[in-house]
Image (tube, rainbow, N blue to C red):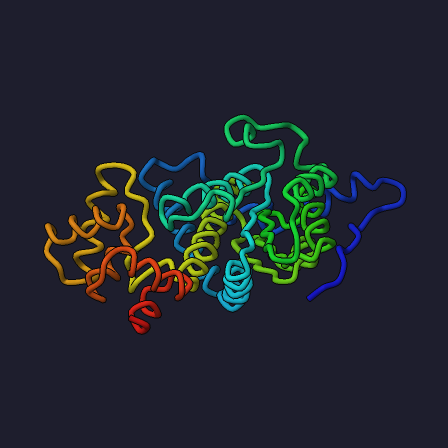
Length: 318
């Protein structure tokens, strides 16, 4: 755990040029020797090269799983305290954080306030780039302060380069407010890693298209975000086996899925599963406890509330 954000290395005579040199030296900015002839390749070969590079990402993520596990435990502990998971990023990284955040309510039945995405330039920047927003550390700090971040929360800073000023400012503000902090970067020894309690640094290396970190680096960040949210939700009772028992059946596909979840979890036929879901107000988790504990919806809800929403614990107490 590091106590402070390291100062950027600066040249006294030309600090801007020195910072540009620092960026140019990043692994994600280098030229990939395996794709130097990219523009001469036929389509099939070009796609094979891309696929070969993509195949390296999962192994790079696996190498940092111990750090991911540390972050998951921080997030799960925060959730048990009623705290939030807050993603913070700019550009592609910010969009990936927002994407993960908005998928949590339908998948896990969470309130939108439980997992939040902050992006340099605001939510409008998801579809239209806001020039210069990522270079302002005070904007990151202001966005974190605007959410009234505190000791119960976990703030995850996402930056492929590992040195985005917006993210550094946000992480610094989060730590000052007592929140736990996590950095997700695609370069080792990153500035955001040094600014966080847990540094997840996935060494994805040079991109197929030089500097286009929406490619391998983006894939790596998406994989890590998937793990952070999914594993922390599983650790806090949002799954039964591998079934998403807190799914919100808000359309025909999800109604069908909820019925199948209840049927598979309990061994009931689809008609009985559908009836239990209806009695449970379409809440699959409650329907599962009703059928397995042979009780009504009100009793099932009491059991779940006492168990913190954990189906197995609720069934043990039945």
